[in-house]
Length: 137
Image (tube, rainbow, N blue to C red; front, side):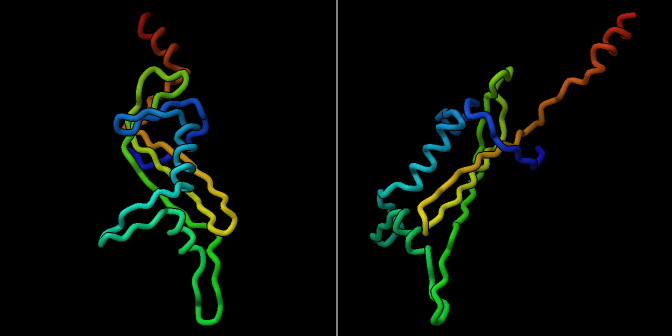
């Protein structure tokens, strides 16, 4: 497996993670909705905190008398998946990298998706037809 992740630019490609399938555009929407969600998450010892509260908490900190504001928090997740590309012949196994940028100060968030195949697609060479013709002679 190569470790080269390529951006997923086609919003209509299909990603399957575990038993769930999404278009690239829908997966981005769901991740952003999850980031903005307010549902509390249990973090142990009967304490619960929402992701939004966590982001607000991490949005600034004190350095002696100076308040330091965090403009962006970056998160990255890598999961096993399969992709079915528009015009592709079959599902391709690999890993998806979900990169999220969250801005506690201005509530702007974005998601980038990248894919790394377990086995790179073999590209057809323009010389394949010529080789085939020579082999038939």
